[in-house]
Length: 124
Image (tube, rainbow, N blue to C red; front, side, top):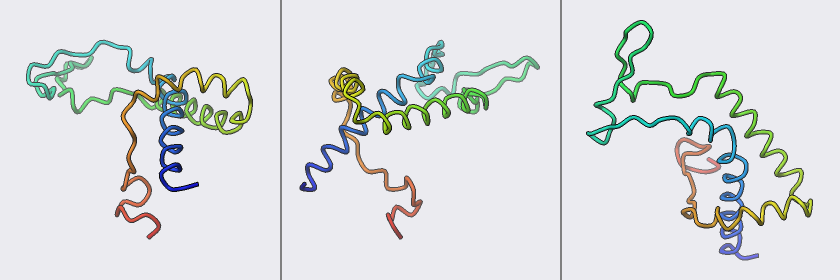
């Protein structure tokens, strides 16, 4: 297989895994709340007042607590695991094919140079 085909397949796989293993997860529940209005566009004009009366800038607020993060990551790991285990199951592949047209409308992925090696130098 040539490099162009490898990249095309990797991009397709990345998008469908992101769609069915991450996007359609508890992340949707976290995304489903109200979004505050910002007139500046950068949320510097948005504040949250907590139960003690502290006025906290929006950009300093954690929008997901530790339990929600743990639950989200558990679900994503389980879905990624299931994806790999079921990859050859015809019924599972039919489900992948059902979601693929939606995922293929997403932007093409690019390599994240700092993903594993902070220097951006893969393998060094």
